[in-house]
Image 1: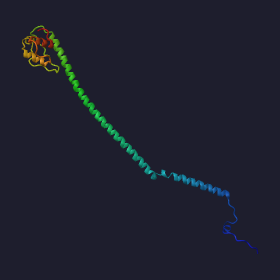
Image 2 (image 1 turned 30 degrees about the horizontal axis):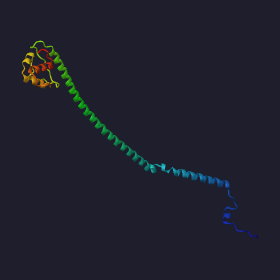
Image 3 (image 1 turned 30 degrees about the vertical axis):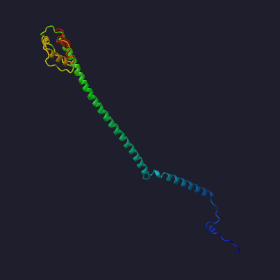
Image 4 (image 1 turned 90 degrees about the horizontal axis):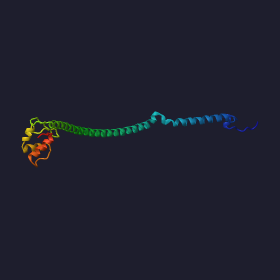
Length: 190
């Protein structure tokens, strides 16, 4: 009998098998691919909606803050527009009042021009004198009806009429003041 050395446990299980390098390379490549795939998929975890909710909520909150800021600016702009509109309306009311006054003044000037024209054609002392309104289109009291009455008007009546029309009152003879009044109202025959 010969002596046979004892075999190790590995030799007993695997025998004298040599490593299969192509199989080993194939399995290592598969392991590397699997590891790469696992790493790639792990990098995609933030894309899962449940883990991305916080990011989305933060974005929504930022958008809401921006919208709130925009709405505040719009409100301020609207308030400015309202103030400007009130100013424009007040200006329009003021302009309308001015235009009414101007229109009344123009109407008064038209009436005054008409009265002066009619009065300038008076040739008979008994012809009626057109009553001349003042610049506010107001008619005077105690206006003489014709040239004869104008000739007979006393100094006080003449002064009252001169004052009504904003002309110089007093000074000089009644005859001179009467002539000044007659010229102003358009009467040429005195």
